[in-house]
Image (spheres, rainbow, N blue to C red):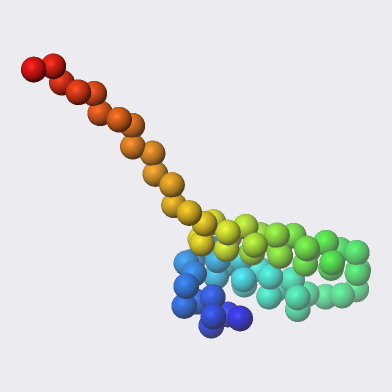
Length: 68
């Protein structure tokens, strides 16, 4: 997954993926906390991918027509 994302994603997505990876390999002593962290990191990764691949909308206000 990391190599697939690296081909199309930026630094923010790679940071989110590293966060997700850390959550997966974290200590499982407290399962409630483990799954909460895993859920939050998956939301963070999804949001980062959505921002990266979403439409890039730019707003250009109309220019006023000068009087001749």
